Length: 312
Length: 294
Image 1 (cartoon, helix red, strand yellow):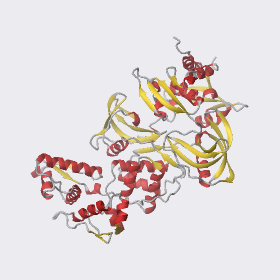
Image 2 (cartoon, rainbow over the protein chains, first blue to last red):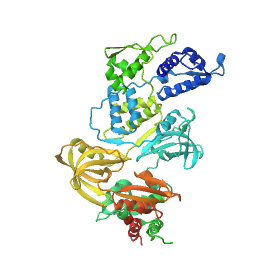
Image 3 (cartoon, helix red, strand yellow):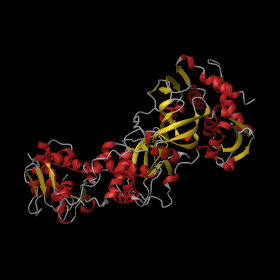
Image 4 (tube, rainbow over the protein chains, first blue to last red):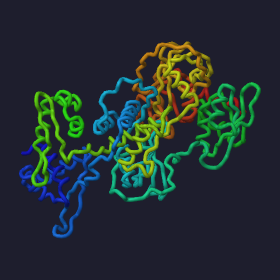
């Protein structure tokens, strides 16, 4: 039996040189004796080789043939896709290498990539301040590939099976999001990738187009409190946290600055639970002044928590 | 491997074996196989390669003139790391990294639409703190301590600045609390360079998840399903679903105030199981705040 590496290398050479797609029969003939003779064993060996090459970044393309070979399946490697048309200058390669050293994602993924790009192996021990740790999830590369190839993905989310056309991935505050068109609801949606409840599977490429007005950078609301009705509450903030809150809501939202350093600010509260979380997160440093119904909502919530244990 | 060798023309067997993390016999075997490859009439030239005196010599084979295409995880990791690095202070979109990322995005088919966005918070004093760390210059800061709920002045020697879970942290020697304390950069209210300098130390960055400048208490909570965000947002030791649908969560807590904030947001159904002394923490905090809503 042929050395597996030799067979893979010969297969790549064969398919790159061929001027038309080759059937499995033609491949086995040309690689005389390197594939098993039995039909099932031959097919199995070929599928394993295809998988190994795909994992190595060399996708073998499949076509149904016409003409004299009508109906049979042909295989080819698109030479343009095979060649990595990435010509980096030395300073560009170095910059990528430093980015990978400074940003930890999945070390083995990027290290292999740098090898392929011919980047120097040795970091010179340069201090990588600042450094960043990006959370990573196993499904991210597949979701990313699906979005670049315009392939629909399937996954389970919130207890339901979904089919989504992924437009892009966004990471913010340590979470990853995939935004796209959700077939079930017929609307554009954004999903938290860490809440996907199953493996993600990918369909065929070129299944959709991304709307030209799609803005990935703004798929998430800037301020969760502002979702819903355009309503605002007035909040009194103590001197200690006044500056921080003013930076957060903007100077335009400051109603009054008092001599003791405390202040009154206007804060969006269309999304009442989000607003409540925000106000209570400030503990003793914030209290809702008005309107009355927003004050009452926060007071009711606090009263429920303050109930003695075992009370009805 | 072959394009790398080709680029260099001549490499020692030992050097190549180390570079690709394989044993020398393994490497020699692979190279011998590669040099035998070729299949007339489909391939006119064999891979031109020979080993002599422990040195690999390489000709220029037609087929392997370019490196293999990046796999999906590799392309994603490079682009994500690169875009994250571009979001850091001091990054220059027109510089080598920016240009490298444009080329990379084009190769991955991600250039006509931004298929990947890295959104990084930029607290106002980040650049100043970063500069102080690079220059080893002492800063006088006002810092909001979440545990104490107060603003305190202190002098810090910034050693390291990093971001994790979407938050920027500074590790610095602190005039109040001692060496290698961790601060949240977004809680620095003001910072003034002092003109004094110190000796830089290499402070290792914990790959683990929790950063604080105090001892922590092991806390066990029972949370309603609506408060599952606790386990998603904070690093927890354990999170298990109970038969009644609640979530039992174990986590490290740095201060009572921090836990008060969490309990008030988690709501009336949240319960502190351990330590027993903190069972009423949420209730007491709610009663305290409720007094301001007559």
